[in-house]
Image (cartoon, rainbow, N blue to C red; front, side, top):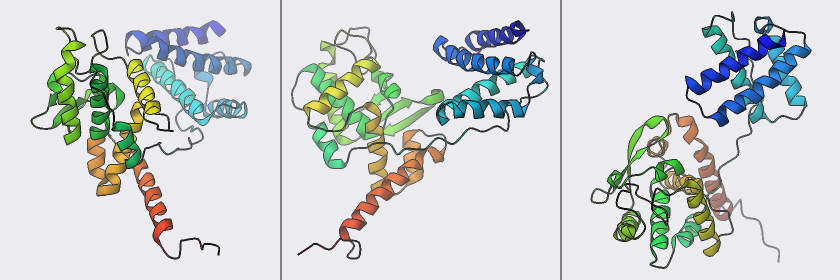
Length: 302
């Protein structure tokens, strides 16, 4: 009885790894969620995936919610069940997808952390002419100048940067390519790095940013370096790669107010993803209002 349920999960996991080429780690996440769903179905005396209806899925999600599962985890769980049933439909082993129409609680959307312009200037004031320091200065200037994701920066090749044209060709999510402007200080910093790059890079390395022993700089190494520079430069806030992207978008939107342009520069497929920065912009305007408007100022006590 239970073997039938488990067997289909096993086949689905094989489909994820061999056909969809998902990583073993991702497949393990699907397995964990689906095994929990299978256990729930067995408790309801369900021995056939066809016997599951929308009410069962809703009851399962509600039970997980009462058990303390977060909205994000519930959304992931529902996505796993929905994908599983899409596979069963494809294989002719289900008549419908009972997870369709079931929604999880909305995830509270927290505003991304940013640095203000003074903090960013302080962070980027890196001194020293050692190759790693020059490289790190170029990395941070480029992250802030062009709003790149960590993976986008790591994957850059030397030929992707055109210093004469002040642009960089970026390969983003879904292998989509975009051309992004590079600011004057970032151009200068990258130029300084390219003069010293041969001291770290091997002749066969094409990566723009290389590690201390050659080869492409790893995400973990970059994250560690940025954290260290944040401490060294006296920045109280934790420094991580995406902080530069958030700050880039926030500062650009504060100055221009052009949401569509910011969307294009960030490589967002949907403008709703970019709209979160309008909330940051509103916070900035609210602070200015509180400081400047005569009716907003608190009266000082005499």
